[in-house]
Image (tube, rainbow, N blue to C red):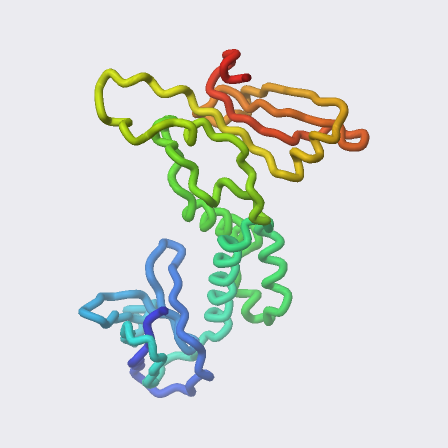
Length: 262
């Protein structure tokens, strides 16, 4: 649970804005920021269980805020030297929700997530948001940051994480992985151990296999230009579904040998 704001001070009295829940986010440069009651703070320092924040307009504004790791949202208001900017805070809240949805709803395109969230936003907050293209790039960047780094060799690939074995709807999408056929218990036991066979990955869903099984005509195709760099080719098996040939099985192959094809 995010920290709670315990103190907040400003130099000159100003009409307070209605209380809003504290929002912890990051700036365009990736710095930690706190938004509270229409004001924005940059992280200054941390000591024990407390974090100290300074107004993002410093040195023009000397306001400060303090947060604690206590989960209770205890807030003690101070006074303000400038007007709160509720629209900016609302826009930041919207962007945080869009980024969270981008990670949790990978089956939806960034533009769909953005359109859905902007349905009920007020015009003031809408004017504070980045352009659509920038928001889409933000969603893609957040998604990419949650992925593991790309392996440089097949040896680095290792076992596939569970989330990469299923479709967006949660259905199993891998039907064969040569890595799982190997005995990895003694992989570092000696220098003269047999070389492990090349990696082969075959992807398909239960529904796709059923459709392929009902097809009377099959086609196969090996493509080299679109294959991931660690593999030699993407081999696909197509079947006639109605009057259309559709790919139902995808295989990543390390070479063009007969062993890999069989």
